[in-house]
Amino acid sequence: MSKASPFLIDTRELIRRPGEMRESTVEIVTPYPIGIEVIGIPAGSELFIDLRLESVIEGVLVTATLEASAVGECARCLDPVNEDLDLYIQELYLYDDEDRPSGGKKAKKAAQHREEDEEMEADEALYKLDGELLDLEPPLLDAVVLALPFAPLCDPHCPGLCVECGLPWRELPADHAHEVIDPRWADLKNRLDLGGSAEMGDTSTSG
Image (cartoon, rainbow, N blue to C red; front, side, top):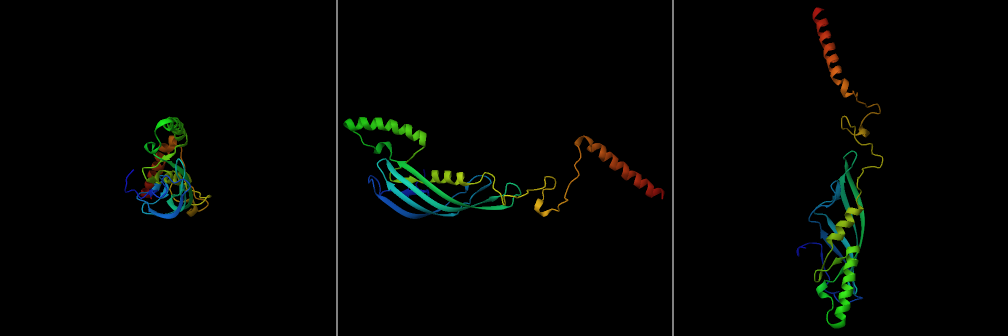
């Protein structure tokens, strides 16, 4: 995790103070595109995130909401697509193992609880604090990807493109069609077409 990452949030006012809460709005400029191949939030986009940080025994509970705009292309006709996203994030960031209590009976209990915590973390994929910092990047990326349509459409009824000429069906006449020839007969058709052209040439010459 880079210390210069725009996704890092300072929690120093909340560390080891269960019950404390802070609310704020943070602005993040995305350093790279966020999303999937066909649609995503462009690099350089401004994200205004409403953030609530709550100090609990285990660490810091993060609740974040934000609105964002994703751009991409229609999966059927390749026209531009704009998608408005309403994102909600809630994750618990745990203290580092080295910050947990040690010594005497408490150490033994802490060790037992640590094993249980590790199992829980593996199951629930909990995040950890890096000292006084929490990294909002992983849950934000997950939230964006999960909110994006796998196959974005410019319109639910988009007819797509003609597979023969590649033009949008919406721009073509209702009777638009292409002659489709079985590949097994294509060579014969070409020979007949050439033969017909030759006969027409002979007729024109003799006339």
